[in-house]
Image 1 (cartoon, rainbow, N blue to C red):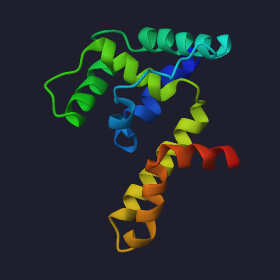
Image 2 (cartoon, rainbow, N blue to C red; image 1 turned 180 degrees about the vertical axis):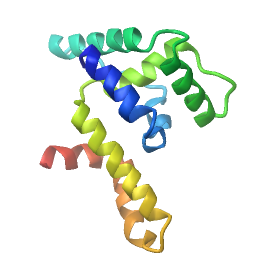
Image 3 (spheres, rainbow, N blue to C red; image 1 turned 90 degrees about the vertical axis):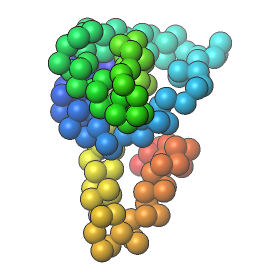
Length: 144
């Protein structure tokens, strides 16, 4: 993801819609992007570009890093998260996605969460379970 897009996503989507992302899923102790020896050079370049863009647009000690760091620490019930960990988590969310894809998923998740808190929650609980199942969600997006 390009540098200007990273700034836009952090400011317009990640901070305001923080609760719409399953941060615990991104934190699981598995390879960062399932990098294999067969990974295309273009995929490796995308990951490297996104990581660099995140580091440039969310510098250590910046307002963006402070806000997201505090939110992430609260999500994991810890005192703080380290800057390298914060960069890794944000990169995991952004790499391989477009601004529009991230925004669409965040708004959909926000809508579903709002509906769960209403009397129509019985309709949206299966949808929420569907969205949290990563494999099914990826297949759903590919069918679109």
